[in-house]
Every structure is written in structure tokens, then in C-alpha cells.
Length: 215
Image 1 (cartoon, one colour):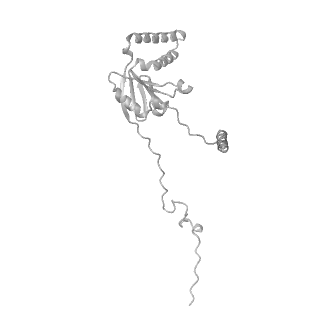
Image 2 (spheres, rainbow, N blue to C red):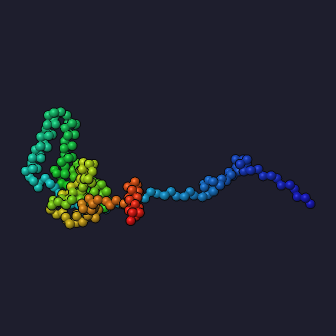
Image 3 (cartoon, rainbow, N blue to C red):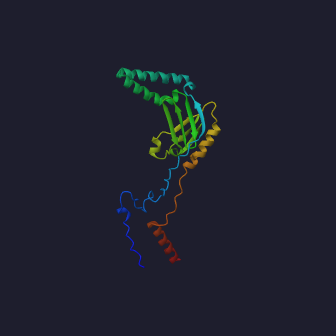
């Protein structure tokens, strides 16, 4: 007994609107798979403060401080006399106070794992340790210096950190010495590897060979 012939089934993409859509092997959404998670960038390491202290330079030298304040007020008055506009006078006053702020106002110096600097009214300076080359010790503070062997390093201003009456000087020096090399180590000339090639080396070899032939 012969079986009835099978009816050919139409492809799914030729079926009506009620038929399921064709499966795509390349699309993760159609196959039910989830795309791999994107790697998030590493979070920056949090900088930890190691030491801080406060210094106010204005009361240390009363006579000099009085002269500085008088010159500051006279400069502001001179700016107002030259151009009596509040915007101009305010700009000049801000520039002068910004430059003299570490002397006029109390300063908070700080040393952290990654940076060294200070903060005060209208002024702040914070630099990474990589910006400094070495350090120099003084009775009233410590200088974080640039590489003064080059013209660019001599033109750039270093960072002088004054000591206060309650500043732990030994701890300051210990932290700075752990971050920067001493002047002796920093100024030590680098040992250049001996160059074995070149014309000079060839002449030296020829001279040695001639000396051996004569002997």
C-alpha cells in the first residue's frame, strides 16, 4: 500500500504574519544568549594624606609685614587712581592677593601619597611627586626643587614649605626622603654604557692588531 506524498513545507520567512521569525545564528538576542559584559575602567587610587601642618608668616616679622601691607594698599589705590573702574581695581586686587596669599594668610601645607602642596585664602598649589627632582633642607623649611641642571628647570618655581612652631620636622623629612632622592643622588652623573661600535672602536682594534704583529 503506497503512502500519500508529503506536502512540502514553506520556509518560515515565506509564511504569514503569524508564523515565527527565522532564527539568526549570529544575533545573540535571537539565540537567547547575552553579550559579554564590558570591562569597566579601573578606579583611580584614592590619595591618602600623610601629614599636614599650619603656618602663618605674617606675624613672624611685624616690621616687614607692615611694609608689605602698606605697599599692597598703595598699589590698589594707584590702580584706582589710574583707572577708576571697579572691575579693573577688583582684578588688580585679586592678582596681588593671590601672589601674596601664602605670606598674608594662614597656610595649610600637606604631604600625601601622591602629591605635595598648600592651601590658603585665594591661593593653592598641589603638585605630584613626579614634578619634583630633589629636595633641600633649611632651618625654617624644606624646598622641593625642580631639575636645576637645565634652563627650563631653573626657570620653573619650586615649592618651599615653611615649618611652624608645632611642625614635626623629622616626620616631614622622613616622608620627603621616601618620595624624592637626596641632592647627592639626584645630581650624580648617570653611568653611560660603553659603546663598542663605531669608527673609534675600529681604529682601536686595528692598533691592537698591529701591536700584536710587531711583537
